[in-house]
Image (cartoon, rainbow, N blue to C red; front, side, top):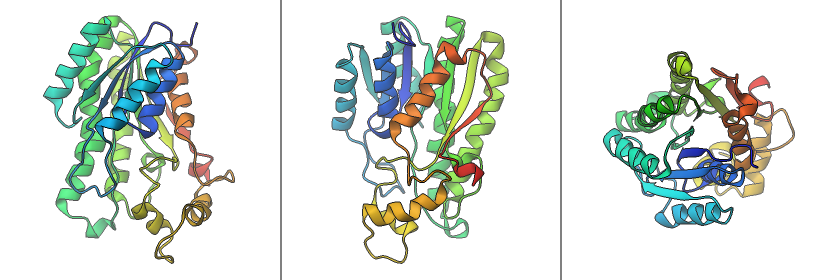
Length: 275
């Protein structure tokens, strides 16, 4: 028996990175998965987007565990489409127990140089998209009479970071949303918590934009040169964590081991927020 055997988990941003790791880790522990991703570009984001092939790879990895998976190509900013996709998948699986609101984007500029579209898109995806996910999923958890929501924030949800004020504002907003939802859903035995990773070794940081932000002294910094600079963020002597580290934290919060934990901001940050 796995730690969440018989459960159904909804994961957004599931095509790659943290979302894929969560989908696969939950499947390994017995859950069926509803995997959602936009699988396409988002305006103002220059990092190469996830693709339909990425989401198909997530599905393949989940199925190798023996779990079932339903994939949906949906933009979390589109509340109507997200609710329709969630309702359809939940009806097929017969319920919903776990929600990981993980879909997110990144971009970078000094706060006073951000244009309105970049600011708005960041908040629309990284904050409103989380709210839309919770709104689509909560009725199913309430109907179940229990459940766990895990909102993926960041160390930027607990401290200020330079050059990403819009990202920091959105991730702080996720904390406020989590705390309010934890109170509102507690009478229904639904727990709501947030996870706050430091840099994670995914395409969101392993790209030219982020590497150059960390190493402005170099024209084309290598992975190793980026790692040297990134290590200064953390208390432990590592440059970044792995997606599975975040997935393991989410698994704990989703499981009965955390049955009385709600309203928690859980850093998975190698000590970054305490540095």
